[in-house]
Length: 532
Image (cartoon, rainbow, N blue to C red):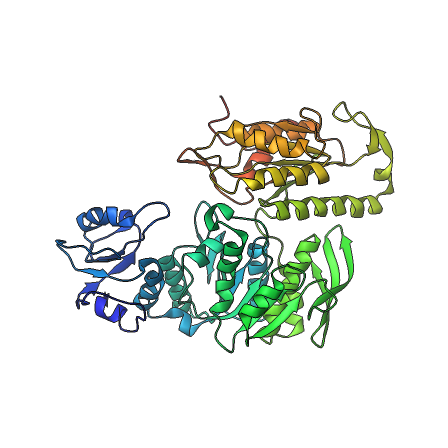
C-alpha cells in the first residue's frame, strides 16, 4: 500500500491539481486490469484515447485517476499532469520504492540482435557469480523464476518493468539486464530505470510505420544513451551507421566501441566457423581473449563483442566473459535448428527486417560452406528437381517468410528483394496480416522479388497459409539443403483481423517435418487461412 501524495513527492513534471493523501494499492494503465484501490493512469493515443475508459476504471473500483485532460464531476480524485505517458514510469517507480536505485541496470537496444545480446550479457554476469535478472522481449528471468512477457515482442509497460525490478531487489539480485525496444523508449516505458550501462546492436530499417521516419526511429533508440548519468558507459557499434550519431548523444560519458572496423576498441580476429558454432579471438582494450560460442554468423560475433563491451565496462574478468559466452546454448527462435532426422537442415529464426533477413541468409550460406568443407562430397554438381533446371551445387537455401500488416510497408518489397538475391528459393506467406489483405501483401512481396529477376512459380511462391508454406518448402528440399522459416521466431501467436491465434513456428516446423517424414509429431497449429 502506498499513498498517492508519496508517489508525487519527487515528481518533476508539471502537475495541475492538488494531490490528495489517499492510499493506493496498485498502479495500472489498462482499465481492464483495474482492481479496487488502484491508481489508473490514462494513456492518450496509440491506439485510442484512454480518457474514454475512465468510467470503466471507476466502475472497477479505481481509487484515483491521472490524466491530461481537464475533467470535472468525477466521483474519485483526478490529477491532471502535462504528459501522463511520461509520468507513468516515475509514478510506477515511486510505487515500488524506486527499485532501480538498488540495482546496476544495463540497457540493450537496436534493431536486430537485442535479445541475443541481452542473453549473452546475462550469461556472462551469471558466469561471474553476479546475482542478475533479465527482462527481454521473450521473458523475464528473476532468480529461479522465468516469466512470460507476452505474445508479441516489445518492452513491457512501465508498471510491469518496475514490478519486475522490485521483484529482483526482493530476491537479492544486484544487476538487471533490460532489452529496450524503440516503442518502449519512445513511450517512456523504461524511464526511471537508472541505467548504468547502455549498449546498441545496430539501427536499420524498421518500425517506420510507428516512428514516421528513420531519423525519428534512431532518435527513439538514442533516448537510452541520453538517460545515462555522467559516469555511465555507452557501448557502440563501430560498424553501424548510427555510430557517429550515438557518439554525439553519449557526449562526455565513457564509450567503448566494438566491431570489425579497424578502429573499434573491441575487434574479432582469427574467426573460424565450426560445426558446433564459432571460435575467434576478441582483441583490444589491453585484451586478447579467445572465445568459443555455439552461436553462428558474423552478426553474432558483433553481439558477442557488444556483450563483452558491457562486461568490460563492469570490470569483469576475462575468464568469466569466456565462460559466459561459451555457456549460452542459444536463444529461442534465433537460428534454432529443428532436427527430426531429416536429410536437410531446418531452421527457425526471428529475422523480420530486411537487414536481419540478409544476415540470416548470409549466415546459412556460410553454414553450407563450412559443412561442405567438412564433407567435400557435398560440393559435387548435380541436376536438381524441376524447380531449377540448371545444374548447380547440391545445397540450396529455401526461405519462408512474410511481412506484417499495418506495419512498415516498404519492408515487404525490401525483404523480398533480399531473398531473391540471397535465397535459391523463396516462399512468401502470412506474418500477422492483421486487418490488411494478405493477398495484397503477398503481391507487394512478389513485385519486389520480380524486380530482382524472380519468377513466380519457379524461384518464388505465394502460399498464404503459413503452415502450408512450411510444408511446401519441405517438399522443395533436397538432401543437404537448408530450409529457414523467418519472421516469427519464438512468438506465440499470429494476428488476423483483431484475433491472436496461437502459433509457434517451431511447433509448425516440427509438425511439418513429422508429416514429411511420416513419423509421430505435433499437430500443425490452426490459422484461419488453413481452409480458405
